[in-house]
Structures are given as structure tokens and as C-alpha cells.
Length: 172
Length: 172
DNA sequence: ATATATTTTCAATAATTATTGAAAGTTCAG
DNA sequence: CTGAACTTTCAATAATTATTGAAAATATAT
Image 1 (spheres, protein in one colour):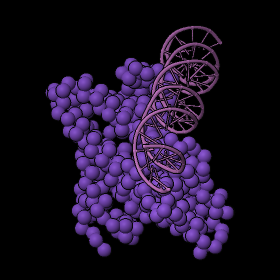
Image 2 (tube, chains in turn orange, cyan, green, purple):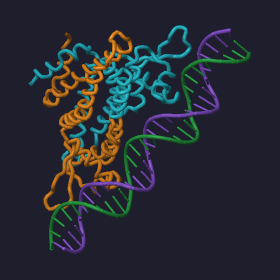
Image 3 (cartoon, protein in one colour):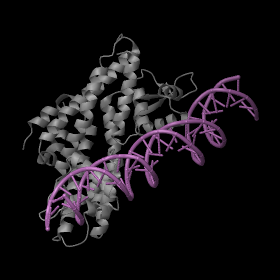
Image 4 (cartoon, chains in turn purple, blue, cyan, green):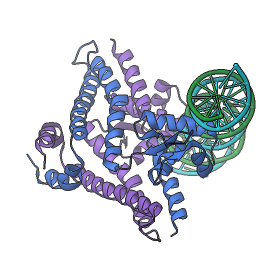
């Protein structure tokens, strides 16, 4: 396969993949394009390569910067702004975990804690099922919260090297 | 807070949460409703409680069954079908991990493997960046694949009990 | 068999979400 | 300052995705 074809296939796949994760297709495609570009690209180059409008590029680049996945790069002697993506996939994953945790878990947990306080007789079947389910989700979420914090602090080698052995060897 | 209000708040939150994850709002709401219902519900009860059409309920319940999160329940003497959700949140999480892995990682990996074979001179900057990025993503994905398999096989206690200590104590 | 209850399908429609493009805003060299 | 280069905004529009509801299919009781 030629490089040009491979690139566009990667961009298409990454875009499709993104939509499964609540990310808009264009944002994922721009991310993919920057991931495989050796040098930073200008907004115009992104427009041309993906055939999308200036406004669309601008908004999605801003969103990618917001997520900490892309940064503006100043190139000496150039008036335009350029953009480049973090290429270390471990860092990318950590950044996404960090942001999603902030945007989702940190919002969900207080709600769950409040819902756990529902008034009424715990012997009532309806109330018992509700409080038990909420408590289960809360406990799980709190654990996930702690675990993700630990992962974010850990380094790549730890994940790529020995995580499976650790997981597999533990049965208590 | 009263139980009725708490339920509808939970249903709303779970629905909003779901949309961040590429799941449609209604499907997540039906799931939430069943999660907090002590007894299985008929399609009609779901329609009434969420104010949605019969067709919509039918399709989303089918999808939930497809994901292994809900099952049909036969109630003696009743002609209608009833539906109930798995309430053990660890099992729910495992089921979701299993399905997403199947629907996403298992599709992405072969593509990445093929894209790694791109033809051309590896000293060319464009080709080097492409192959390095793809190789990084592939390595990460393969590791995630193994790790998730291990998690799926593990039991809840392992996650809820000692995972953080394990993670935190490991630096090699 | 027939009538009735229940589920499923799917074309039409509604609601949501993404995209465009042109105008307004900003920056900066001369 | 002025004007050209560039970026940002956002109302209008397009594209996508979800929902309805009524008709068709299926299942069950008598």
C-alpha cells in the first residue's frame, strides 16, 4: 500500500472509531491527520487535506487543544499558526483519561452521593432496589476514580511492560 | 428527596452519561429504569414511565439484549414479555468491556497491522512518522486487548478490593 | 379455525448535531 | 495609522440520527 492511501485509510478508521466514543468524526479525523504528519500543519493545510471548511477546522482544532491533544506551534518567519499533535500514544491515552474523568466521573459522583440519601423505608422493595443499585454504582465509580488517578500518575513502561502479568497473577 | 424524583433524576443522569459514550439517550434511560426496578417490566410499562413510543422501546430493548445487559423474563400466567437488567455493576461493566472490545478493538487491530506494512523508504520523514505512529498505536492496542481480557476473567472482589494498592506499589 | 393480544418492522417525520461561509474581529508589518 | 493576512464567530443550512405510529407479522387462548 502507498503512503497516501495508508494515511487516508488511517484517517477514515480513526474517524469511525471516534464516533463510537462520543467524539465527532471531523475532530477525530483532524487528530489522525496531525498524528501522522511529521511537521505541524496550518489550518489551511488541514482544510485542503480533509476538504472541510475553515470554520469547521477552527472549531475542531480549538476542541482538540481543549482536550490537551494538540498544540499551537509558532514557526519563525511565518504569520500563520501551525498545529501539532502529541504522538506518544501513552500520553494521548492519559490525557483522554484525565479529561473524561474530569468531565464525567467528577460530575456523576456527587449526583450518585445525593441519590443515595433518598428518603423512605429501606424495607420497601422499591427503595431497597434503588439504594442498592445506586450504592453499587457509586462504589464502582469511586474505585474507578482512584484507579484512574493511579494510572495517570504511572508511566508508560509500567503499562506496556508488566500490567498483564500483574493482573493475571492476582487472585485473592 | 422522594423515591420518584430520585428515580427520574437517575434516569436523566444515566441518559446524559450514555450520550458521552456513543450510546443513544433512550437506550441508556431504559437501562437506568430497569436497573432501579425491583421487578421486571413490560414494554408497556417502559413506554408509560419514559413517555416513548412502542417501536422505540422495542428497538432499544432489543439493542440492550444484544449488548447482554437486559434479558427477557417469562412470568407465569402472563402473555406479555417482561424485561429485567443485570444489577451487579461489576458484571455490567465486564459485559460492556467485552462487547466494546469485540466491536472496536477486534476491528481496529487488523487495520493497524495492515497499515504498518506501508511501502516506501523508512528514511523518508513522512513514512517514518506514519509507521512509528501506527506501530505505537498498535502496540498500545494489543496491550489493552490483553489487559481487558484479563480483567474480564477476573472477579469483582479483585477490582473493588485491592487494585489500587497493586497499581500504586508498582514501579519498575 | 378465529379472534385477540402482543411484538416487530419500517417509511415518514422530528430532533439533534455538524458544517458552511461570509462577516466581524484580531494581529502585525510597513 | 492603514491595509493585508489571518482567525474567530455564528446564523443559516445540510447531514445525520432518533422517534413515531400504523400496518404487518406472530403468538396464544378458546
